[in-house]
Image (cartoon, rainbow, N blue to C red; front, side, top):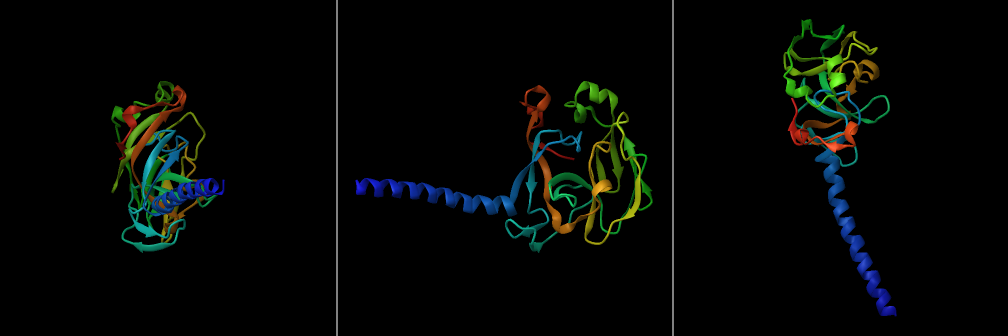
Length: 231
């Protein structure tokens, strides 16, 4: 009996040990190197849709101590137009938004027209491929365009039928901080509401959608969105 007990204890310990080894590898990997992030809202439409999972490259700008925001090394900074994951200054939740203002920039929004350092963004027609997965009713009531200004060239969405903060600033982005907007300008809680984001709060860069599910169709996979590179 004692031998059997010892045998089962050994097997249990071996199993636990294997799990601990896997965790010891995966936790630091996801914390410092690469991770995924669930997008629960439509604040980045039409670029990122509700209920998509995006890949987060945590080595895009720096190397952090696992499970912290402490930087061991930095080799770059976010650029205007990058989609990033960061911790919200309001509640520390992880958000996905686009970098619009860099340190030193003066940024303004005039009735949804972006102005950076006195230069006005231009808006051109958006290819239909970017709106193909948006519901017909919502698509018919919304306005879509490509926003172009300096390093910016990306889709945006305007929803005239909802109340929104369509004018903002001008504000000057402080040193070592960034200004974030959602691509869905009329349905995004971003820097217009919670202010600037410190450099150390930026987790990593988002280059691609890895999985997509449609909540309006019983979470059926949007197969044309899987592994889709983001503008």
